Amino acid sequence: MSVVEQVLGHLPATRDWQEELYRDLHAHPELSLHETRTRSIIAERLCALGCEVIEVGGGVVGVLSNGPGPVVLHRADMDGLPVTEETGLPYASTDTTVDDSGATVGLMHACGHDAHITCLLGAVELLASEPGPWAGTFIAVFQPAEENAEGAQAMVDAGLTSLVPRPDVAFGQHVLAHEAGVIGTQSGPVLSAGDSIRITVFGKGSHGSMPHLGVDPVVLAASIVLRLQTVVAREVAPTDFAVLTVGSSIAGSKSNVIPDRATLLVNLRAYDTEVRAKVIEAVERIVRGECAAAGSPEPPTFEYYDQFPLTDNHADVTSTVTTAFREHFGPERVVPLGRIPASEDFSRLPDAFGTPYTYWGVGGFPSGQGVPNHSPFFAPLIQPTLDTGTEAIVVAALSYLGKDHQ
Image (cartoon, rainbow, N blue to C red):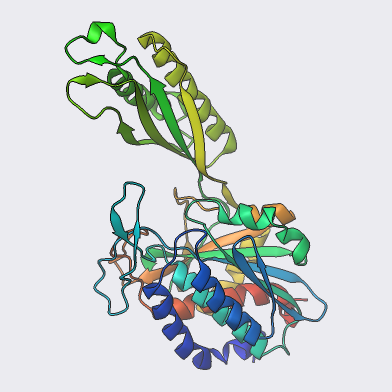
């Protein structure tokens, strides 16, 4: 019997509580940096499994030590989203929150973080239940606030790297709209760097009937929106990747009043740091140029937020894990993940340690019926999704911790 088979032999006993926990977490999502209940549940279970439990930066870490050997870190994110759930599930979330406009909206695990938590806790229990065939240290990191790109950095800023052993390798996984039971891996850039920019441009207020006495920021913002469409089309090489989206343009409140400012919310994505820098420079240049052309009385302001790093999978680590996945799941269930233009802050954790990493995808839906993350209808199949995600963590960890690999 292989090392993996020995450890995964305990999966049937783990499965029952995992499914129950998943339903509970799904029904009770918590927003970024407010994951109090979730963190408490995780910490209690880690403690019961014999882990050293560390709460840091809004997250919780379980360190499972099993003698000398390699150190492996795996991260799961914990936060939900301000999305009103429409899945119709018996365990659907009915929790609500109030958004920035004062409106009441639902809370939902619309991105699979409830599955990530459940799979990682299951993997910890499996490793703790069968310590004989492996040696080393497994670090389970439950991170807050992935959705707003603050959580990983918050844990690092609070001293994570000094509180746990330096990992030799780090892993992350994500439930996606792929077929359930399938694992997707990818070497090199896999998730894009992402930046959001709040741009404020200034005009001169006036009566709608007297536009010649003002500077109209509505027209200015419209010019900027149109001009920004040329950045990717004409300034980024066709062989490179970039996305530029203007997601919001807000100005004024009455038809016959020319306002004194307009605000644009811009989102950028790129797989290359040089391309990212080029696009940011182009955005600022265009905005400043259009403001000058319009006679804007004040220079524009740029507020950067929700900034996500590039997720760039290490070739050797990805190769090792992919080989282990193929041996366990069979080659037909391990597919190329491809590049995904969404963004993550996971890589800030291994980067803080100077540790190589890989990040893979886990399918969660019937074939041809995938629902995108962040949809109000996002509802992965409980099985085989939880089993697949749990097995993937164990298999990846044992490709380094297993005594037959040391």
